[in-house]
Length: 138
Image (cartoon, rainbow, N blue to C red; front, side, top):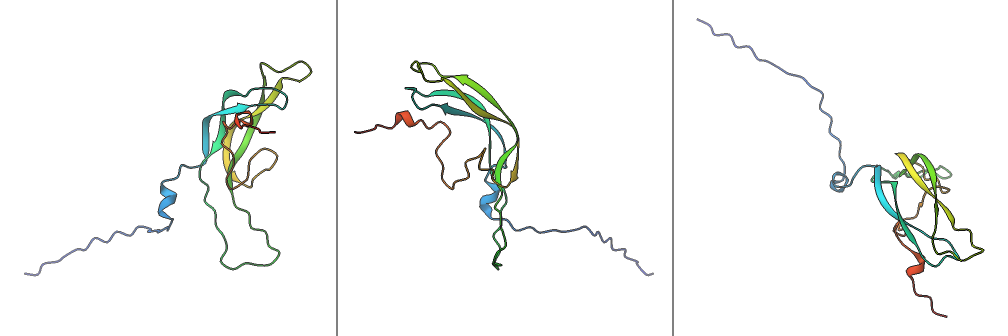
């Protein structure tokens, strides 16, 4: 008597993507609630308000071979859509317009940094930083 054996073979696509271990610990680009300090030159104090901002990690790459005159853009977490709210600062002296505007993010994406709406520096000031809190010596 002969015994026949059937072998079941399952094929499935296997993709291996290597990412730095730190990439798994960083939050993705997303909307977050944030307290920001509003201030204006001539007004004595800052006022904290809650708003939404874009924050998080975007995958970036730097080419190994540098090609002269080619532009390489690093993507940052930035606004896709936003609107501006106005706020009237209390305690501004007469003659100083107390109205300030600040952005409210509606949604975010990883894209090129727009210098007119985003802080694109490596290490920036925190959103709740207030210049009036720094002692000034004459």
